[in-house]
Picture 1 (cartoon, rainbow, N blue to C red):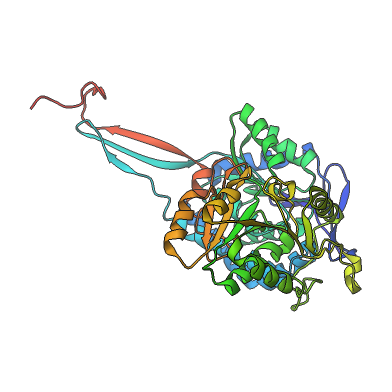
Picture 2 (spheres, one colour):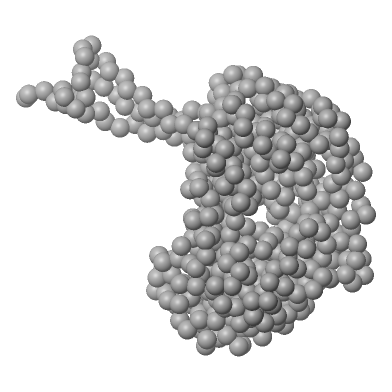
Length: 497
């Protein structure tokens, strides 16, 4: 067990409150992973002032130099990948195969940022006037508040922090209280790589105290948040009143369509991984399986048989296929949705139970759960559960499948399995989602491509790839007139020839 402190202006400091909270292993609640400060508005104020001061120098460090530091951070992460993965599994529960992937996504994001330092391209364009040049370039905004979730404790903060720093901003980072240790290690690595004091600050604590203090502070230029749509609306409300930049990546209710010409074995691998990977605790998790009548019975039996063989247990064991839910409250939420589904008239086809066999009795485990007879209007088909619960919906054909898939307030990820390229493109055009996979599950985003969704899934920004750098910058337009005379655009557009 380790006692951690906030990192403000490059130094480890206790919270002014002197209060602490425990970070426990969801697979074994008796194990305390670490003890962290329960910070206050005063701690946030100190961090913001450190970031504000550091911004005045960091913004003028050439972008390629900033990129070299971020690339070095990625290289350190490569060296420590296994240690970071094992720590992450202990504090949030998902299996080692997945936590290694989580760290790798942070590594990939850092390496991408390392190259992007020489690709922060602006535009040059002809002027409508003689002897005049027009171009644009990107400028940082200032101090950013980064608020990240617990399900990807390194990958998601990397999506936000690397682009923010590369573009010349400074950061005050509030990680989720369920996964603070992984966040702490990421910040330590950034400092070790050479990020100057004050450029990245981490303040541990609750959303109510630390998060709200970030939202409301006049020196915070923008907020980047990943989490629930409910909290996202609150953030948008507060930042909107103060005209702050705000990037929101919120919930999902993602569907996988399987048509009669699909490779059913491939589709089976996809739905099992999409629905039960990370114990369903992904915004991109496959929570709805939409099957055409022709393959419904056959494929449903395949899904049940494979779900029954999923090995549940501590994620530190290499053979484990599914770990625990993050905490008792989340397990209770999942179980309450199972009861809601039964109450709505859906048939519980498999699972629907707390799992407490052997050592799993010490953690927050739940069986993979499948509902059939689900109607699109049911809550289990429309609301984000964030657990290993799959709702199966039968449809007549592709058009009905697309209609059902779109029948939700979310629009993050989607999937279709078919061998017919024409129907694949037909679906791509009509599905209302920010991401569509063909012959792949709803999870599996790559860091060099835009990530985000439509409707209640966010507010239009896209993390990942080149689009992430647009979030953290303003575009400056420059006009240089070397004519030596006053030229009036739209009036003196051209001279008489």
